[in-house]
Length: 340
Image 1 (cartoon, rainbow, N blue to C red):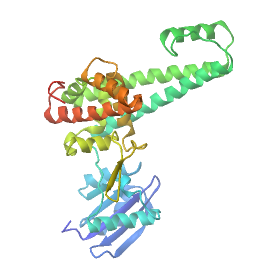
Image 2: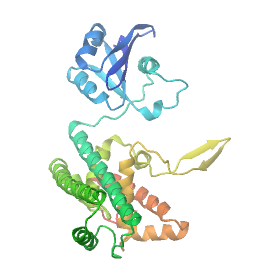
Image 3: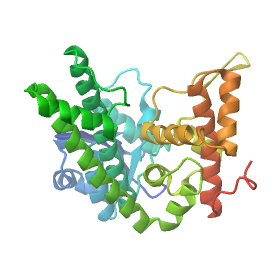
Image 4: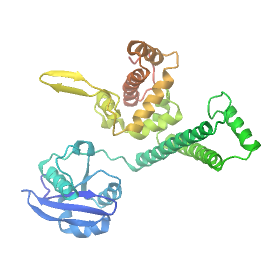
């Protein structure tokens, strides 16, 4: 920071990026807008780039710019948007000014940027999760159609093999409504795509993180797919200073409110920067709760105490985070006797 003369703030969007350049004193030397293209921004900012540090706010359009500046040996940081939410006023020009000022003062809240391998795995996980959500919506639409039209299905669990076989028999025995036919075809398409993506995701994870892949699966509740979710959002584990930091990152600990010397425990935050990670942990906790293991007994004990399955799952998920942190930092498989 000492040898940097200029501080450049970029507020990037899909089509345009607002930029502001400050000197060490804080004077604004240049400001304006350009297309969100590296070549155009480089041309505008070229006189300042060699002796500058660049700050960009994390959004859907920042990653290509970030990679291009990085590959050309320019100093660039990405802001953590969660720490920038409390704003009195907000617009693109103010955002760019604020980012450049934070760089100058040394208060820029940096965000972790994964390497290309982790970024690709995250993309696979996000696509898979989106397909699963769409599959659930398709499931609901089909069942709603059946209810609306008074079509009685066997008392099997919906979308099991026997239930689907009964639905196919019904569709083959009469002139079916187009809504039902296309709805079911869409569901089958999503199912096939999800299965293909599952295999690609598991193969990619085994190829690049074979040791971590095996270690996490040794923990009760984690299968091959949920392990991919964990690796995508937690590695490298060295970026977390403690298991408490990892718990807070995953959003499985309640918020705290402190005022007048008194501290009160709040609720689990409804929003989290890693909601997919928290979803995977809750799914693993749900699976572990059905087993006769330490985690399973802990789940049932918490459920009896709180009389709430949701709270019990979050408690188990929080314990799972501690276990994950331990096994990944020690590179040893899970042993309930050695981990409390």
